[in-house]
Amino acid sequence: MLEELGYLLMSLSFLFLAPVFANRDRLASVVRWVFIAGFVLTMVFLVVISIIYGLDRMDRFEIAVISINWLVLVLNGVLLSVLFRRQLKMSGEPYVQLQR
Image (tube, rainbow, N blue to C red; front, side):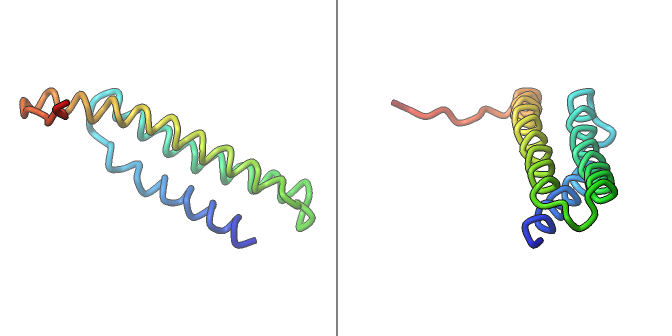
């Protein structure tokens, strides 16, 4: 039960991260909607699995929420790396390259 609660809180943190990327370009908007979709999908799966299985849901919800959260983290990890790289190039500041 504590693992489910932890993943629910992780999904809630996605919802609170979403406004950070408001009023920006299209890529930031996609990042925001992936965070929001992750939270919404988690809540939908919680309700549906609870209705179907009740308290006897075993690991079904936990597997679903882990899959959703990891998908959000992987997608937004890639998108945020592109977004931050683009912002770094647009700022005009030279970034540090490692010397070999």
